[in-house]
Image (cartoon, rainbow, N blue to C red; front, top):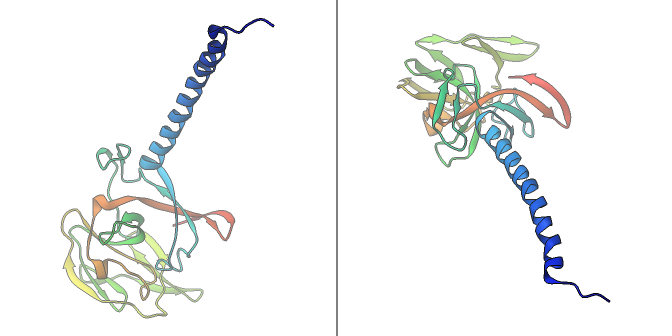
Length: 212
């Protein structure tokens, strides 16, 4: 039986390495691109609580447009392109000022506006924001956004009046009597907003597109 030389045994290993390195590099590059996109462009969020009921329910999956207000350098807070600011009525994903956890809340007031919350109702610059009933559901108008609110547990804590400083926001949940929000933890930094919640895309394993 012929002897096997060291060169003959090493050659298959080196060939395997040469074939494997490009595959590993391609996988790592694809993973980096995917993570970068999630960091800067779009992501999803699973709702843990009922603070945004009836708009959003616990367990809902939300599509989040992370570039809605600007394009950021992946994995950083450095803004590359400004695309505007959150407006009253927008639903946003943001970092909690208390513990850094991810929150889903509605923007109530932005810089320069004087806001007061009384029994769950919103007053902007002294004007009560319109509320009416549709099909047994209370609907509130904030800016250009008409959205449902829940008041059966009361309106929650009062707030203000307070004029919102530059770079700050007041955010609240639509379930006014069951929401840990800006009435309790205070105003949030606009830079803490990670993106605009665009729609519920999965509810009770039912795929769909429910705009927010």
